[in-house]
Image 1 (tube, rainbow, N blue to C red):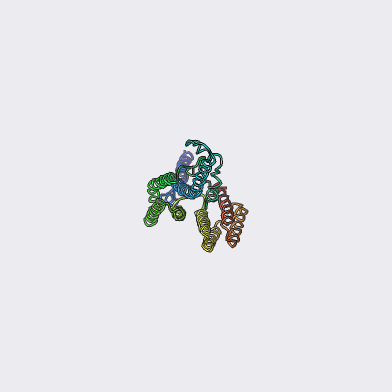
Image 2 (image 1 turned 90 degrees about the vertical axis):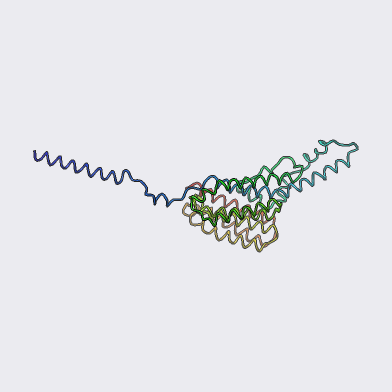
Length: 312
């Protein structure tokens, strides 16, 4: 009987121990501090905002090409009228523009950053059209609508930024600069609009530190400096372009170790070499070459983003 009693007590002790172990390990929950330590993921509104800023840049950069197209259409109309012995109706006058005008050719010939933006997967149906617009004001009207959409997206994104801990000063800075940029766009100032929209993309990227992102925010900062360099080169400010690309090179250096750890050091090396090639070509002071080399750098930046986003 004593033996049975001892066995019973031993069993009770074992049960209590097991319950304690299960309670400590099997039903653990992260503490509030642990939950707070990990920022939320980059919201969809953030990504949409970023894309719309770049799409607006694409559309504005395409205006000069479409203006050239409209000029060529008018020349073709006059030529047809001079060569025709009979009066042509409106449709017959439009026919030359469909046959003789290569819209894409003029779009790229007059562009500044469109080739870079294409490497980023950006396009705009406002300027990528099959038929020439009747007038350029209709294009600017669509661009103004696109800017209005950016404001709407900002209104949707702002609560997420506040919740994620973005400072009031950084939010106010972005709002003020967005308003200033909108005025510049409405004034149809192409170059300054491109410059300011690019700067807005940098300000937006600053908010990325409040979120969890697979791709480091430095990679987007490199993009900003590259675009800025090309924009400056388009104005023959090759010294300013050199300053910006050196900043891109310095910031890009932070991406080497993360890529090496992913066994993708060759991807970084390709980026580094293209940056060096770009810097060497700036000495030639040819915008066309700068634009071509800039597109190659952007292509290599996108390859780095693919590695980071893959999570491998």
